[in-house]
Length: 134
Image (cartoon, rainbow, N blue to C red; front, side):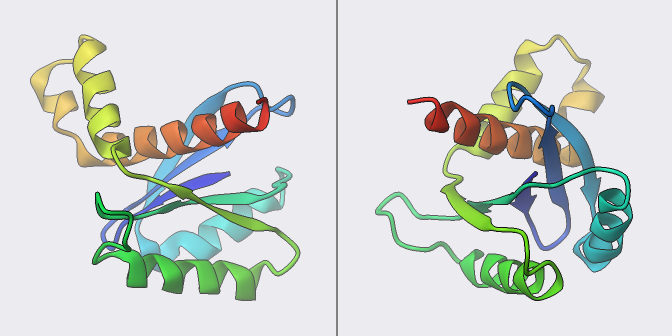
């Protein structure tokens, strides 16, 4: 399961049991994420959490890194049995916006920030899975 964390929304992606393809799951307000995950995990197994790590172009943490660190700490505290991996999330939002633009969606759907967050999480998870193969 992967997360594109934001202070207004968290994009969530999951993968199939064979871990071949990432799929967008949902976009949740940070206030509700733990309850959402507890409910989800009652019916679906989660092997690990992949969390987007916000960085500047010079590889230093971005302004939102402190919020992501708080989110990671909350995940560790709530789900101590699930390993967490951080993955550089630079360009994921731009890649998500480009993917949406190329999809042929109408302008209103292309401007949907929740969709961008979910697709960013998909890109994170797919990148993590692709890296494991090499």
